[in-house]
Image (cartoon, rainbow, N blue to C red; front, side, top):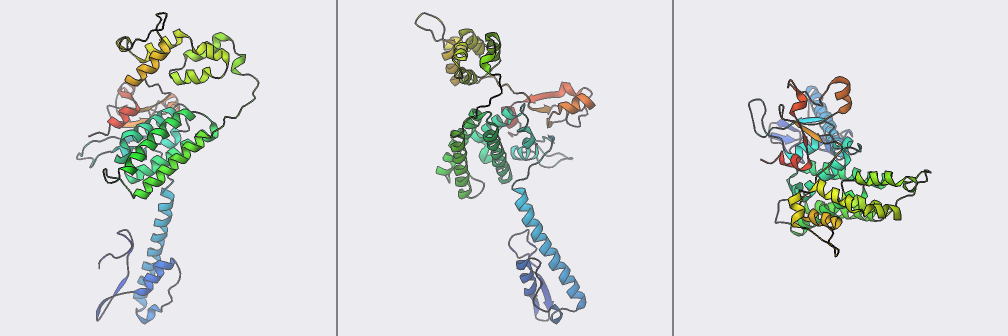
Length: 365
């Protein structure tokens, strides 16, 4: 019989064969709607004892399946995969059919634990930012749902810990710009899901931006502060930063830190770290006295050239196994475990750190 129901996964109607042909059993329809309520029709009038036993089993199975689908769909909205590694295959082989997409990789890899790790937090945020800029519409519906669920966890973490708010503001700004373009240009690009879903996502992002805008840093009285440290230690802290905005932000804390943050040698080293000599020679900025304005040069060069990315930990790619994985340093130290089942004689020589841009490029076909 044809499969009639709410959708192709539905158990459909139950039918019985009579002398006049096939007839639908209304009692099963009532059973499906009430979900586990007993049928009011006496089945023995229509069915004999053997058929009634089968009919009851089918109705119970259908009801259980509907309940399972309901709870499964409800749980899947907030479920996350926790796989440490995935196989990246770009074409079908005799052993494997199909290929791995960006959305599948984003779904399966354990990003939920990564955002709780201070070494991986910045890496995941940067990856989400790159996806928001150019790859958001290429994700499947499930991957998009996981994307916004993970982003929600990140925003709530920042609101609770008061750490890295500027990083998340930049991410949300890029994401809101992309969503505005998609919503206003509906019909110009293929969107997965109803347009109302994308409007709701845009409203959620704007709400997150408002919450971060109203975020008030709480002052913690722990006794020792930055002002109590000697100048050479404060200077060493500033020289450890690789982001110019972090230096500017720290310089706003106290007059002493502001004085140290304006040091020309500090900004010169920062320019030399991020940019080649040919690059900052093309955009030379001199003061009235003929000195090079290294601070202005840094922010000018940042508009033309990408800065070096620095992360505490990243995903790794094994060239021998074609596996993308999170490296577990605890297991690597205790059990000589590389983080995935590598078959190479010298696994460490096959590992390559994967930058956020490299992660996206892995799935371009």
